[in-house]
Length: 616
Ligand SMILES: Cc1cc2nc3c(=O)[nH]c(=O)nc-3n(C[C@H](O)[C@H](O)[C@H](O)COP(=O)(O)OP(=O)(O)OC[C@H]3O[C@@H](n4cnc5c(N)ncnc54)[C@H](O)[C@@H]3O)c2cc1C
Image (cartoon, rainbow, N blue to C red; front, top):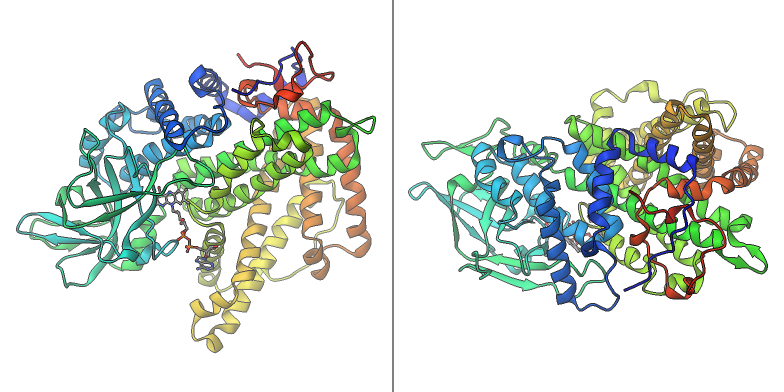
């Protein structure tokens, strides 16, 4: 078991104030989550556990989490839920600090399985499945992906054929391509899967498109049911506490009532009925309700980055290199502080995203796609830089970086591949723009002018950049449609522009939410510390996009050259607050272990490391 970081009493008023800002109205539930996660069952596991031992530990953690009652939070009180999905997202944000396998396995059970059944099903499904799910007597999974289709969910091969005489569906995997792939909870623990399949009213009939069905795969003794074949995915690069598997079905019969029928149903006369008659529209409507997991992955990507940054900044503040403190060196600040600024910007952006999710805002799907893609890409960069800042100690498996890197890696692929998600954001925004006849107000106009440290200028710059990019890509697609043979083909030719647009969209959301948080901060000391970080986020994002900003006359060469100097000045201002800024994440120090070499017996770190203070 790795050593926890030593814990000198060094909390600062500044870190407490910023923690209060980050937690907002949810300090109590965060405290409750911390109390759970600092119990012995959740502390870091020793390196080198076998896959079976790791799965067993993860299963136990999910059971303990279930027993805590916290997973009840997002569901309807009518079925034993807590009726507070926002609170649940606060809990979710803490889970990844303990272990990502645990976060993912509970996410498969309560999120992918529970929330999809909740979103796509109706009362009868909620009454049947929620009570056992919430009391821990039912384990579920979500079987969407197939070997042949991957991201192209609309093309799944699995079939559900209806028979009105028996009021039942028969589920079949027609080919090897149609095997369900990488499914969480499939290899060992899942009893029922939400299975996505093409609904057919007769064997040779036309498909009505993809629908979801509740399909049992194991009995209560854990035995795989007749007609179901399961193969373990085996060792993965990370997340080895989760039992992923391949599933195929041969003539598995389920009652008609186990079709999730919120968007389509089969009536008394055996007729297919839906309020959304067009197959594709129905599919997208259905899929758009499945964003909770995506939001949770965005939030935990950021939690991974926060854990790594807490470890790395604390390390750099305590590490001497060539007679100087590492964190005092400009290059170390340039390597770490933009990631810290980014983590804060993402914190405030995911707060908005959660609000939208809970309010069923129609923009949720578009925003969740861009933010999840961005959060997981950025988390990998932050974790990697943290590992490098920690030098050789960062390479020890006791340190946080290796496990985080291997676990967070797949956050870029599941819950939607990041490229496919960026295309989704762009497609949704383009569709709106085309419907509005190009929204000509966003055509290139007068460029914003002002001081790079002025929040009004920052907001204007990122908003105008986004709308000009949207205008540009919309026009390019429309102009190219005839030659390409249609808008869809033309859009395919413009994928690179669409992907760049989705990141500009994320930049705009992040800067808007960060400047808003700074504006609303009441405490002057906290506001000043957050303002510097927000400025660094703006300046760093401008640096990363300097070529576009120059090409499009948003800045000139002189202003571009100035950005580096401004960033360094901001780094120097951020340095004295750096430990307070990571301390404010309030990650229990027991969850951030450092290699033994850095915890010599009876030696406290020579500089206060604010992240080390145990939380009540
Ligand atoms: C550990 C793990 C756990 C998982 N758990 C589950 C689960 O519980 N349930 C479940 O249903 N699924 C699960 N998945 C599957 C996951 O959701 C898919 O892997 C993911 O959707 C991508 O599909 P794919 O792997 O087939 O990749 P593909 O779709 O084949 O993508 C491969 C590459 O092609 C690119 N690409 C694809 N389409 C386009 C396009 N239109 N334009 C441009 N580029 C494109 C992608 O960017 C990617 O780089 C899991 C996967 C893993 C690895």
